[in-house]
Amino acid sequence: MNSIVVACNNCGTKNRIPADKQHLGPKCGKCKTTISISTTAVPVELDDSTFSGFISRASKPVMVDFFSPTCGPCRMLAPVIDSMARKFYGRVIIAKLDTSRNQTAATQYRIKGVPTLLFFKNGKLADQVTGALPEQELTRLLEEYA
Ligand SMILES: [Zn+2]
Image (cartoon, rainbow, N blue to C red; front, side, top):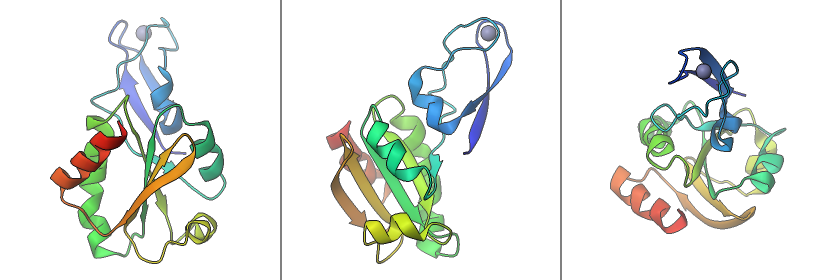
């Protein structure tokens, strides 16, 4: 699981926060102040072993970017996905899954091309879009789930 390092606003202590805990109101390990991470949030990197559990336990709607590191449109979309993780922090959880290393989840959701974006609400697949979307269009789509 990927993680981010965020300095506490209150005491300055650097806290390492696993990406899948970003949305659970993490507190500083030293002074217990809630850490603000809306400007540093990153997509949660899921894999075959974490995918189903994460989706079913998510407290917010989840969008997952199924991508492959060798796909050009996926690389174009990546910074947009990163930006959405910050923009929709606290409203929609942004995640991604590398299909070249995680075939099980990709097969389960019949992913035929990448990038494919899956939208989950209450643990259920609600929508999916294949192809790289412009940032504006993706923002509009996510507003429907937020
Ligand atoms: Zn602190």
